[in-house]
Image (cartoon, rainbow, N blue to C red; front, side):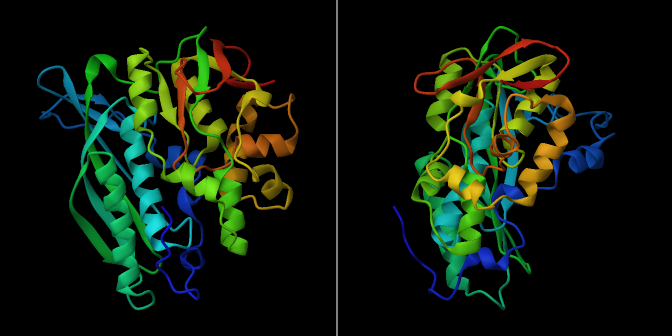
Length: 337
């Protein structure tokens, strides 16, 4: 459902230096920032940390009674589209995705809102929150409040808590050689969003993809016994796959012709709508990736910074194309053929 809430003269993307997950701190810089933090913890912990910062997984997990775990994650970003209600929907779907990527079910979320209150009307902020609330309700997830600040750039997202069966948890260090590599949403959101920011042209396909929950894919992955996975967001397919294969001690082989793309993505790339985040993604993985099988343009699409992308799974589920496989670790962590 598309709802236009902003006057024609207000384009939310023009109030932000970047957009969506493309505004993430580059992966190499981020790893340097958090280096040394993985070994720290309380001397007398109140709960067991099952998944933490070690391999940059999608969410933290702590053990609770009955073989269950609490899944905790947060995600927020600057506007990726101009419409406030749609921005809220996208940001909420993106935040909820981390719980689905762990094989969990979201239970409660709290809002995170930054708003330039002297520049943009409060009515638009209300529309952002309405969009987030409606997506959370579709997910069966409560929204229990949140926090807001006066910010020079509009920002929105959620901190989400979910539950997961610890015997069926999905994590990014569990990929096994000999298993298929599947992707549940097409790529291309990043270049289409860059085109939107520059020209105002809306891709309905991109909006539909970004607002679509990964709930069904997460449940199907758990039902299929898949234990390795992540979601594809700001670091692009190549960045997230590199992290997954590196953590698992395997090599990921991508069949480039099997990777699906949204309509118009290649045209947007050809027209030059490539974010700085996408170029940084490719630069980060380049030393560890065999790119000889594809052109530079194809490599950029594979590194395209996604917002609210699909799940990248070590296994097969109905309806998701198989785009490659995991093999024993070789010279490269990722190979594109």
